[in-house]
Image (cartoon, rainbow, N blue to C red):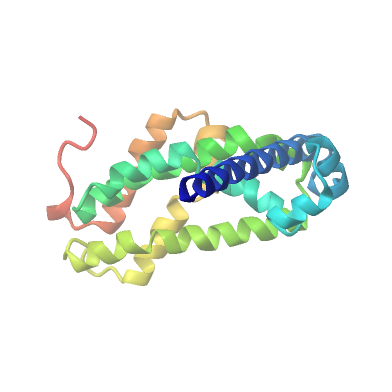
Length: 215
């Protein structure tokens, strides 16, 4: 009996995940065509072949849908692969040096998944609000790397911990990525190498800087 219940639960979970994926795909398609503000939940439901109540149950609102799309694009497989490498490193200075690979993963995923939607929704206040929340989240997610740098005594002399967090947050921003890669035509590798050198110079004591970083 227990095995049967587990099987039924797993089957329900799979069906729910498939529905969620279908709804996100429908929303992505419609947002790219018409912009976020012009699309209704009813239209997304029709495109996905589900009831509007199902979408509300999964995402609560259209803003929740947009947030779901952004989370999937920013923190998808590329991000998790980059973070898995960093999570296996104890040295705080090396974790700073690996931060650009995480930034690259986030923004490359975003460009692939969200670029058309951004173009169609350039004046959406809802999108700007969600982006602001993700920026705050990104700032918090970087905190442990800076805390470890100071705890291990590897921070640059005279640097304040809060200033260090701001320096990392600004340099790893979407704007810097876009200006260098999208606008200036840099390769992702050149961006990674430049950002690693820049963060190490700004944050890490010279004696603690990793050697042979790009060998």
